[in-house]
Length: 198
Length: 318
Image (cartoon, rainbow over all chains, first blue to last red; front, side, top):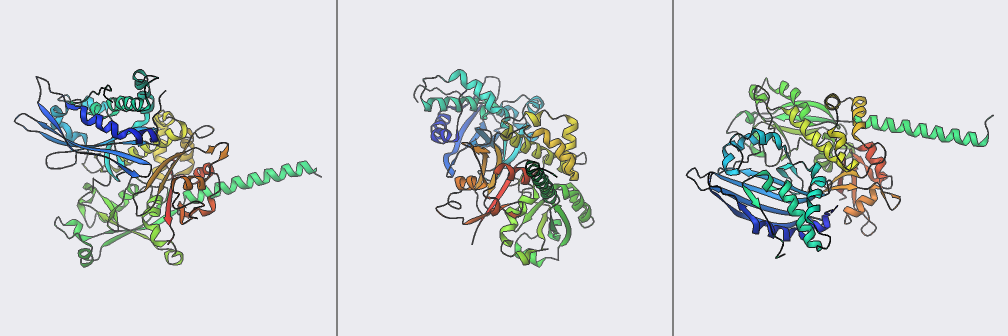
C-alpha cells in the first residue's frame, strides 16, 4: 500500500496546492442556489524546519437575492501521529463571526449543499474542535483515525506502479482530499483534477 | 545454606522486587502530585463595559480569590463546579457563562493536563528560584466574558439549563487524545474505539475522581498488550510556537531509544555533541536531565499523562 511520508508531503505540497487552485469549483444546479467560489488567500509555508502547511481562505457567495456569504479557511498539513495528511477548517459568516458549532451552519445549508434538514449530516460527520498545533489556534477537523486505511485503499486503485513519485503523491493527496477533504465536508464544493499536464 | 547460584538468583529477585516497588512508589507519588492554584475573579468581570487592561485591573477593587490544590494528572475544567459554587455568591450569573482562565494575559488551554500547563506556562519563571518558589502558588485569573474561541476550544455542548456542559466537552477531548495516542501505540485506534460503554464510563469516572487503580485497570485495555509500535511524545518550548509531535520508535536498529536520542534528533540546536546541552528537559515538573540516557519506553511508562502522551517541556538555560 502506498505510504505518504512527511518528506514526500513537504516535497509536493506546493504542486498539490496548485492543483487545488486550478480545480476547486462551486457546483451549481438548476434547482438550487447559484453561487460562486473565490480564493481570497493561499500559500504554502514552512512552520518549523520539518513541517509545512498549506493555507487557503475562500469565500462562497450565493448569487440569489439572499446573497448568503461564508468565508472558509482551511489548512492541509501532515500528521506524524497518523501518518496521513490532515485538513483543518473553520467558517466565518459575513460578520466575521467564527462558526464552530454545527448548529450555526443551518442557515447556510443550501449554499453548502446540505439537505434542508442536515440532522443526518450532523450524525454522519463528527467533527472535532481542536487546537491546530502548527498554528496554535482553534480549528475543526475530521478525526483521522481511519484515514490511513481508507485512503490507502482508494489510492491503490488510482496509483500505477510506474507512475513517477510526484504523480503518486499527487494522486494520493487527491484521493485523500476527495475522501477527507473540503469537497467531502461541503458537497457543493468540487475538486476533480486531471494529472495529464502535471 | 544456599548455594552460590541460588544466592545470585535470590539477589536478582530481591533487586527486581525492589525496583518494582520503587516504580510503584514513583508512580503513586506522581499520581498524587498537585499544584497549589490561586484563582482570582475581578469585579469588572461582572460589568459588560468593565476595564480590561492590566493597569485598569490594578485600579479595580481587590479581586475575590479561591485557593485550591489541583492534581497534575487532572484538567482545569474539573475544578469548575467548585469554583462556580464559591464565586456564585459574588456573581450569580457565573454558572451560565463560558468560563476560561488567563495566565499573565495568555488564555489557558483547558484541554491540556494541568501538570503540563504549569510546566509550560509557569515553570520557566520559577526555574532557578527553587527556594523562593517552594510553597508558592500558581495564580490564574478566571474570566467570564469575551471567550477567546480563536485561541482556546469553546464549550459547544450545553446542559438543559443552557449552562456549558464542561464534562461532556472535556470527555470528548480526552477520548480524541486517547484515540490519537492509541493509534501511535498500537497502529490503530481499535482498542479505544471498542471499549465497552461500562469501561468508557469507568475510565471517565476514574479521571474525574482521580482513582488510580480504576484508571489503570481500564487504561490497560487501551495500551498495547506487548510492545508499543511507537511512543506518543509531545515536546514544547515555552515562549515559542515550537511543538514537536513525534511518534518515536522504542528501538532503532536493535538499540533502545533514549530521551537523548529524541532531543538530539528533534532539537539539535539545543541538545547534542555539537552545541552541548544548552537546555533542560522537564517532565512532570522534574528536571529530566538524569533520564537522558534511560530507555524512552520506561520514561514514557512512568511519566505519561492521562491521555497516554509523554509531555516534555524544554527550557533553554540562561
